[in-house]
Length: 178
Image (cartoon, rainbow, N blue to C red):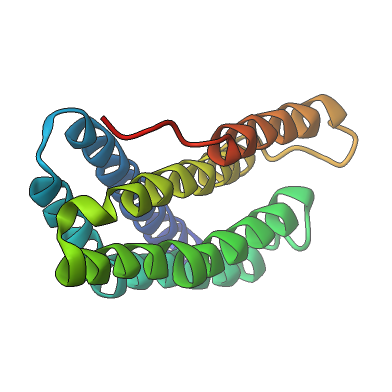
């Protein structure tokens, strides 16, 4: 077994944990939002806030680091899928650290100060932002699997449409809480 094979394995496992773990947390949060009490929903957000620096940041860094090492060891160079994948990983890492994490922390602080119900709109907003983040992450996974060339305009247009629809869904006005 060569270094590239080991790096591919590390890269795929790290990406699986990062993307799969986050998607599971999002789906659980959305499902919980429909039937759980405000306190239960905040418990889920507290779990996310706990896991972010201890799980999601390390696996995102492992994904990024193994991907960069693989880029050079496998001799792929700066192909469209590596450039766009790297840009996407950097975006989602920064988005998580600068937007999603602080949104969850804000919801937890609001709940501690004024009660769980007061934080529900912030929780809902954080879940919607996470959906946009995961549309980009799934696009990255698609790029890694398909490995399109710059001439594959239809693939890039399709990915742009997916991200645009996620952005529109994310930023549409929130409905009233029941």
